[in-house]
Length: 146
Image 1 (cartoon, rainbow, N blue to C red):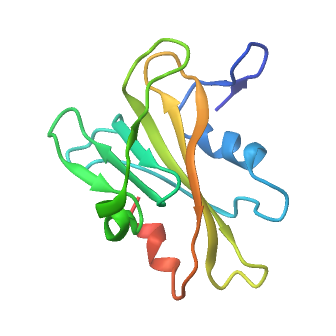
Image 2: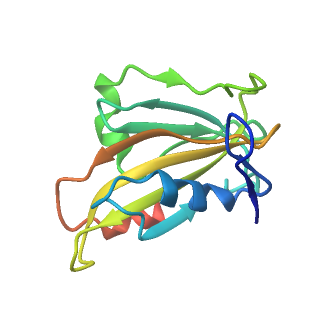
């Protein structure tokens, strides 16, 4: 895993680089403590990504099997979502690796914030597409629904 920081955008060589990007991106006090990388049941690790940052909703669509998967608890809030479709700022690809960084409360008991990160499957550009507060407990089950 190595990230090239020399250009306009950070560029990762592997999907796991999303974690390092999100750790650097995260706000002070909302550091990334846990990370999960998305993988489809069919084995694919590249997805189309759509999100509504205001509603706290993100979904990934597998280009191989067409399965739509809402990240974490997003499906509960999807009805009011105004989805923005992710497209790479560098190469305009619409396929990315997807990972979620989780910020925990100081006692590590529950999730307080999550970041939806990406790595362009074509050129490797890294970024954060959405993020929102988790305002309920228990919430640790969200680790298993990326």
